[in-house]
Length: 168
Image (cartoon, rainbow, N blue to C red; front, side, top):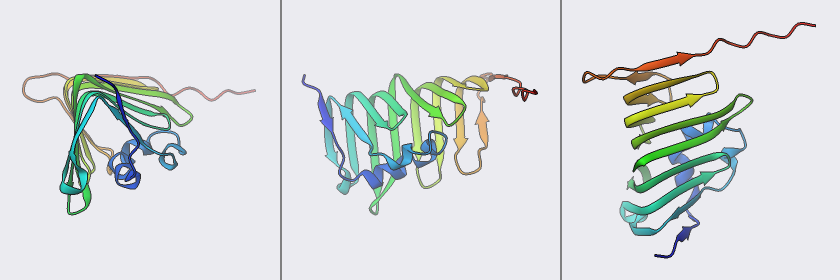
């Protein structure tokens, strides 16, 4: 099946979709176009639902999200939710002045209005100063709060010490 590359003309709508994630990245990422690629696309975002299938890839500057499938839901002309499934869904982004953030999970759910990202199943997050593992991680983009674990699963955190300032 041929690969279908979608350059979304409604980029401002999709920019809202990942604005919170992009804030963690390079400051110029938010100013760049967002591109979507997938093997298939069906639905109509203006009618409320766009489904992406097979080899889904979203890029905007240093932000790269890969999944097997995705669904973008719009309510009253605004992006309301985006869901991605994969084996796994992966996220990669440069964190300004700190290095690369990498995350993966079987499912990613983003509630745009609430600014909440939920990673479900085999969650792995590696940041320049630490890492987290678990089965479910809920991250509030507005407050920075993290809720992880539950249902008998454990959360594993590693926090690296802050680098000491060099003295001359």
